[in-house]
Every structure is written in structure tokens, then in C-alpha cells.
Image 1 (tube, one colour):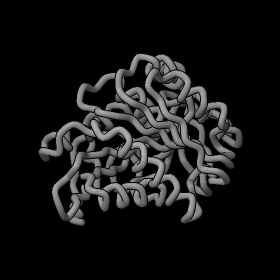
Image 2 (cartoon, rainbow, N blue to C red):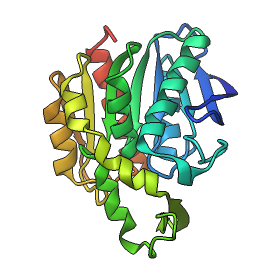
Image 3 (cartoon, rainbow, N blue to C red):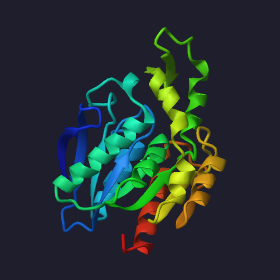
Image 4 (cartoon, helix red, strand yellow):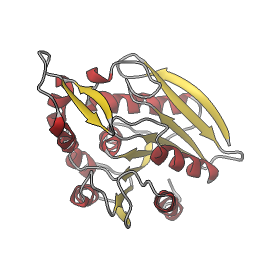
Length: 251
């Protein structure tokens, strides 16, 4: 495996940090991975899957959304729409590196953004949604411990033990996106992987997303939590994705 740190310009004009992994031998395709809400490209859920795909012959690109991880910009100023824009720029970065059209993989809210991006891009060959909601407004439940909004409308929340400021624009933008409708309009194969013991995104959400897509496959990893934290569950996730890809070898 050959690993390269790269950067590209995101939707808001900021430098975004990414990791490009290339297999030792000929590539069978390329995959772009989107991490979960307030996470980063280095979260094990994303990085483990990227490494497994690369070991199987795929060029993979993981990156940090604006204002997160090693990327520049202010997270408070981001929206779901800006994340869709960042994904679009990342797909272009793959094309510029001659990786071709890509498989798009998103985890949690990153999966919702991936659905929206896939509905607008012509260079996506397939879509994988991992523990993803059918409604991006689902993340509002994370704001339950929010302090009162300040004069700008922003709220401060703690997610995974870390503080984040959620801007008013992000909150308003949630109602502007219809993930179910976007999924229904896709003409590419879709894999939805649900975590059997998910306490963040209910199974009803992942199943609604799978039901919306015309050409969809639903796989459950029993007893897995939202992050597929146990090594056996992370392995099950990777096996599910690779098994689906093998069955859909035209991707």
C-alpha cells in the first residue's frame, strides 16, 4: 500500500486535508469515504475500511470536512450543503489524480451527505451508506444538551466529550435537504449497512434509506454499535462492503 497526504480546496475555499491510499498492484477502482458528524478521516470506522479496500485493490481517499481534523476553516460556518460541496471537490481531486469515477461511501451524517452528493455527480458508480439516517435533521437530537443560543443563533454542544459550536446556518440548512427523495432518484446501486445495536441512528432510519433507493441492498452487522468499535464488527463491515462489490463487479 502506498499512502500519500494531499490537500485540495473545499467548497468554501479552504484547504482540506486528505489521505490517498493506492494498492501495491493494479487498481480495480477508486472509493471516496466521508466520515461522520464532527469526526475526522482518522476515526477508525473510516480508516479501517479504507485500508481494507486498498488491500483489496481499491484506490481510496479519506478527508476531513471543513473545520475538522487537519482541514482549515471554521466548523461553525459549515452546513450539510457545504459538506456536499466538499464531497464534490474531493471527487474532483480523485479525477485530477487519474483515479477515475468513484464509489462513494459515507458514515452516519456523512452517508446522508453522500446520498445528496451522489444525486448531483455523474462520476459516482455506486453508493455505500453506513449507519446513515434517512433525514439529516436527525442530528438535532445531539443538540439536546445545548446551551442557550447566543446572539448569532449558534449553540454549543458536547459530542463525544468534545465541545462544538453549531452555527445557526447549519441548523436552518437541515430542513433544506430531502435525503429520501435524493435516494429515490439515484440510478446507481446502493448498499446500506446498519449497526444492529446502534444507539445513535435508529434502525428505522437506515431501513427507510434502503427502502427509498431503487437498486438497494441492506446488510445488518448484528450487535455492532454506531462506530463499529469492536474489531469483529469493523471486520464485518468491511466484509459486507467487499462482498457487495464482488457481487456487483461492474462497479
